[in-house]
Image 1 (cartoon, rainbow, N blue to C red):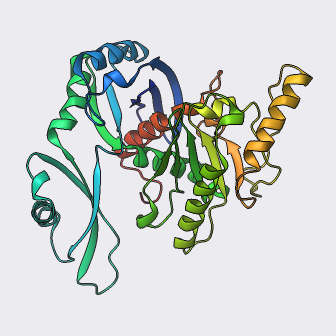
Image 2: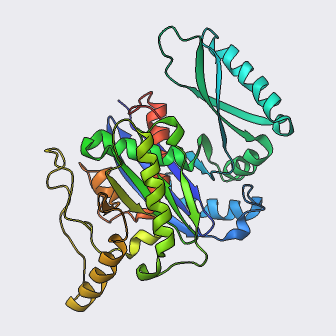
Image 3: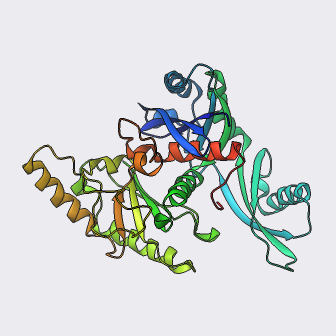
Length: 359
């Protein structure tokens, strides 16, 4: 089977991340990754990109990809892609479903009906049911073009566009596929301006959306990351999502995002899933330089983790062990590359016609 290449790109407000992956059969191999600093000036509003600043950043990223490997997968901010769950008669063909969904959106939101890009995924249909639900994803064409045109100008060919939630789901599906003991784990992204929770990939469709709270000030020190009020909100939401699932509670969280780099160790609680396939995958491999820094950081980590629900196991996301266990890269991949990695994985599996579960 020939190798397939893809670069996942995450254009953020503080930096832009790119990860180039190779799919060799069923194995993902990391080719390269890079991060370029950016700021809010790259956005014209919450969703659209300024052309020239974006081209300038993408031109830098273009250098990480081999000369003739130009396929990319782009991550779109959650506000760019809108979702609606709509029901239609179950006997309709695919083309009839697509036409009917467009008509329904026009009736429900006439102000957004012009110039829309529409995609959808059909949910399983119960036996003898006359109605079938479809999760519809739609965006304004004018906004999507501000993301596509800069890529085309630097020689990229966009093969997939996905919102943050889909990239997170792809990452979690891959982890669960390779290590089933972690199928009930979600992501907690510690961003400079926000904290975002992404539920496990096998959760019901009504709980698949990410959930985020803004941070008043940029948090750069582990001891200042979350207030008691913020932790209470996170715990309450995670419990609410767990209550909606028939398969049981959320068991753990992978800490990711730029804030997760503050953590110096890989294992933050002694409890971990018991699975013969995951044994010895994680060790208490703290990377402290001296006893003083170890004590100081351990105290901050313990204080941070102790605020969460004690039933949750919490670990730093270590991409090289979870995604590339058979051929780990020489240098650790920072946890803020999780969405770019997830989007690249989705593009590779989609092009290969393979899926790990639903989502």
